[in-house]
Image (cartoon, rainbow, N blue to C red; front, side, top):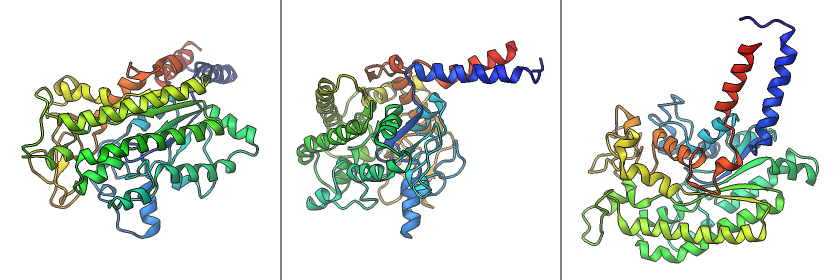
Length: 393
């Protein structure tokens, strides 16, 4: 049925009411993100272009082929968890900070992303002192927070305005910290040597959270580490070693997964301490580990008929991962159906895997407290409601 011109003011009013209901139900007007390649929507791509340095391999096809149909700087074949969050909240996909800081503007109802692929929680100086040079970036969590603090006054005229923006924003603190371990393992450091890093990494994350709370943030999502023992990269590095033990159920490396669990336990203990000090702030722990373990334990249940351990795109070998032949290298191979794989390039997951993790976290039970209790209305529901309203006019 056609809508008359007299109906439009009513429709506009109803849409405004829907938007108010969305925000009243605990949802957010924008997303502000920090982290590494699990959240980077294009920062390293732009930083590399500006510095005229050699572009990383994930700036080339087949990266981005599934959803964007071109490389965007995301380390996957399509969308990341942050993209699914934005879509569920009815917010446009979050742009990289390198694309918005030049004009100092933030789109109303959007946000900004400071995450950089390859970033660490600890500063580069720490890792260099331990013999590990970050070949991708020096944009640690501390650097990203400095970028954010310099950028924030450009969108708000007073301290009160700034606090109001942060109060209504969903802050994503990573994932960050995984690369503090990844970079070290890639250059041959044993996992036992990295145990001393963990409390320092946790302290860096907690320090960043406290800074943002002081600036006015009231809702922060803090992800834990993924089950790194299930990574095709790690499985390849340790392949054939008599010193490693495998989980018979998943085929993952037991010691590395226990390491990730220990990181996550320390992080949750520290988050509880923040909750005690700031009872009015929503500190949401996102259990990336167990959300991902679902498809490592039962890959076919989630549509991963080609398994969860072997990479879709890579340079061959038992897990299709080769440190010398990265995905997008002319000699690498790419699977025909990435949606049937959980692992994309050895270190990162496919869009299909990130969707499973997103649903488990933000529409399921893998966050503490449950995200659904804070933001029960998704934009899918809002679209359905608005569609029903239009049809009724």
